[in-house]
Length: 356
Image (cartoon, rainbow, N blue to C red; front, side, top):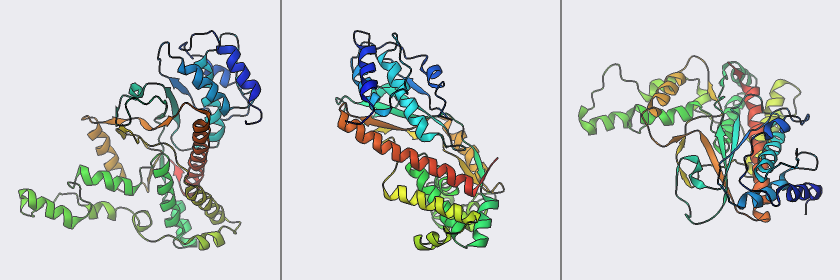
């Protein structure tokens, strides 16, 4: 049993016994914002499921997320009030240092249909679902000046920073980088291909006899609009980055952040995906470019394409948690590593770019 949770769990029991488990949990945010040591809060939305006693069971589990004195509990506090406060206080503490990347909201539900997406997992299994929903605060981060400085001082360091940032984004909330833009562009413009030769061959197959209009936008033109450190080239080995990290200069700080991200990735840190849900997230943790490339064109056309319909969602991922303490605490530990990775990704983006 974790020290420091006994009193909180007693309050959970006292404030929820004999009360309807489906009471609204509106109002938790006001109490939460009175906590002075948290600089950024993660709001939580519950999805109503009238009369389901699993809210009480969930409240008891969520009490494991907080320490004594971190909840605002009174006579009218419901099970879902406690769930909302606990999730918000817990996530906010672990994400308080995030400054530039997209913010998110937690959505707690007992019904897998709450997210508006088709579900492909076990249909009868009862789980707690916690969705990570974009708050649509995606920034544009210009990496030109800082990454070119890194490359000038230590060739390959800028490329290493960009590559590790992309990898961290794939494990948390994807950054719209030139590589991600290339993926979307391949379907927007090039029939699923990503190079001129395959595209020309594909066009020939569908009847254009290999003749392309002179105004055709080619993969090579897209890639040529970016400096090489954003789309190709090798990064640095870990031992080289470690030597750079001993420097007291700006490059040393960047190298140390890269190493911290690498360490978390080696520990398999990640945030939830849409593993059992059919949908494609339509928002991103950030847009990464140089300001004079073709990233903006792809972004505009990507969002234009989403307006035509499809399984697009503002949900980054959904955690599926079993209703037992052991599974819940395992999930808690995994999420805290994921929050740490997203926090370090935020630090890295500030090291290599400027928000515009």
